Length: 575
Ligand code: GLU
Image (tube, rainbow, N blue to C red; front, side):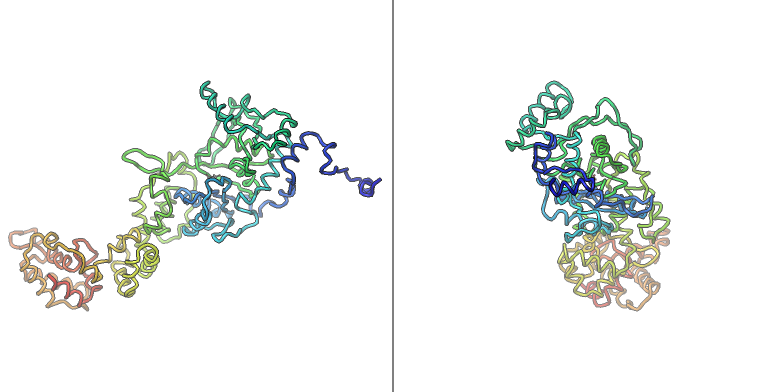
């Protein structure tokens, strides 16, 4: 007896065969060895590598699984925020998995863009590939293309168990088949009698493998389309859908898995408990449940949320990546919407109770809002409403201090508007005093919705822009003569003192009004309009227009304080 056999015999260990000794193997094993010549891991190795997470029972493990196509859809942030909130509210884990198995669609740098977008929106990711490329977390790699060996191990297991098989149908044959199905008006796909390689012998398969014929691996479905599978969707509730009967491709000819298979393996080994994804995946859920079952694994609970819509005329349609700039996260950055405002807006879309909560808790961090899926239930699709977003953004910016507005708008301007950046950096104190106008009070001014609005709101404070802007005074002040304007200016300037408090200042405006023949208050004017040329508001309007070139501005008193006496004199004398 050879020494190895002797040892095995003594210790009662099973005989193993030499891996290349085909005689001892049946055809199935030989075929599998041809498919997977160097198996790296056994299923048990992998099970050991990803032990259960050490979390309490009620903790949710959620994920987003974007494909790196170079475009970050606002819906991706919606999904991320929703999943992140559910995980962290339950002291669970939120991770990001990059689903890059479709190499044709992949764009370089796209994974980085995804991670940066989550960072930009302050959506804390516990595990995933960092923006700089390294993995954080024990359940990685978090990029599917780096998990190829794991998928192979389980594809192999399914083949061994007769639940998957190689298919050598060339694309032309598949196309012919689907044309025939269309002509005969029968359900399309690779199933039943159309599943040409489903019941081929292992010998036939090996012959093709020897010829190096390209192949894919298909799942051998045992479902019946006329039967139904029932499950409870986290968002849609109790559902009953036809069983899957398609022998779908689980591994492509490039050796990488399809989404269907890869996400099943990953959600299992990453211990996902709640998989929230777009409703476009709903119809594949029976297949996914069947895949879980055939691998002997418990599926996560699925929740399918509707796509974000927008109004076009009176009808609703899905926000389109191609047609709608607001579908792209970059749009919000370029426009300068504060990320917190977008986040609050999305929270509102996820759970409409957010608005009421925000009113009750004006200063609480939005992290404290308990997100539920209740309001998404039965929703035909949240509607992206830019006016609402702007209102929320105005509120968010209204709450910031002048320094914060200065810093954030400067940061944005450095990226997108060098002219504004120059304006802000030229005299930071002056810029901050402009931002202080009507800010910090109980009822702050809410005029800025995005940083790209800032230029418009502040430009008239700066002499360069003010002097070069073409102001049509006669259009802005249509019913008053040049002479009268001059009289108002002279009277007002003879009294103006920048140290005056608001009451004192207003008293002087009133005096200016009465000496020019205008009523000191609106009430007196309304009582006997024939006695006056107008009222105090008209006089203030003259000053406002001359000082700002606009009829609508924040309070004139504060504008004057900010402009300072020199500028005031220069501007008023300009006419
Ligand atoms: N990669 C899939 C997608 O981008 C993910 C779906 C899922 O979350 O499971 O739609």
